[in-house]
Each structure stands twice: as C-alpha cells, then as structure tokens.
Image (cartoon, rainbow, N blue to C red; front, side, top):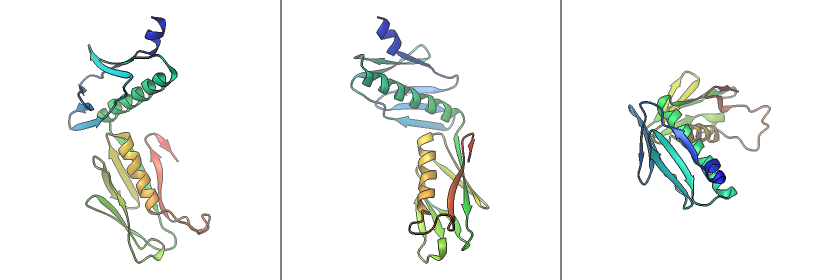
Amino acid sequence: MIEEKRLRKEIIIPQGVEVELAENFTVKKNKNEISKRLFHPTVELKKEEGKIVIHPKRFTKREKKIINTFRSHIRNMFKGVQEPYEYKLKICASHFPMTVTVEGKNLIVKNFLGEKVPRTAVILPNAEVKIEGDVILITSPDKEIAGQTAANFEQCTRITNKDRRIFQDGIWIIKKGDKVF
C-alpha cells in the first residue's frame, strides 16, 4: 500500500481548462488546444474530481520513469494552453545580406552566404511565426512544436566546412521562454 501511494501521481486540472481522455489526451482552453497520445500498457490515466490520476499496474523503476514523463507532458500541456510558449530567434548576416520570408508552411532563406538556391525550413502545424526586422518570433501552445520549429530554422542555416569563428551567419535562438542566451 505504501508503494502504491508513492507511485500514484495526481495533477490538479487548472481552472478553465478542459481535459478529455479518449484515445488521445486532449487539453483545451479558449482557442488553444493540444492533443497527444499518452499510452503505455502498464500505466493508466484517469480523470477524477478535477484531477488527473496517473496510476501504474506494476511498481518498477520503468513505470516510475514513465509516470514522471507523463506528468511532465501533462504539466507542459496545461501551461501551454494557458500561456503559449514563445521562442525568439535572431537573423545574423555579416557576409551577405540574406532575406527571410514565410511562404505558407515554410520559412524561405534567400542569399545565405551568397548561395543561389534558397534554403527552406518547415513550420510545424499549430505554430505561429512572425518576422519583425531581424527577429523571428515563434509562438505555440505546444512546447515540443515551438522548440522543433525553432530547431528547424537553426538547422536550415547550418554551415559545414567553414570556420565557425569567422562565418557566424545564420539564424540563432536567443530566447527560449524565460531563458535568454
């Protein structure tokens, strides 16, 4: 019984947030909605009296890791629907003036290091991208989507076979939530 209480985790549902447990775990508030598939055969998710209860069927280290992972995902989802995650990226161009534009679901980088062929990066669904001068702002209620979109932009302007101390051109993450780099 002692082991059972320690591994059972309860997360209080914030006020105004709707939770739906079907095939996917869905969290909604106003227009923000996040849906993830949280499934493991030895861990159960239940909704009880304004709480989400994560309960293991077995009590091993593996279940403890899975429960803590689920708990982190759920907390991030609650936080994201209340206030979306925000990433700021800086466009740095010292050798050649590059042009960065958003076209549909892609970010297009033209004239990067004088290249003739434009580079593209994918903007994931449920992410908003705004370009203000030399700053790119990414907002999304889903932390993983915001982070992956920012990573796609950084990887788009990745340089190989050049001295990184000299060729510092590219798109770089300068702010991730409250962390400033």
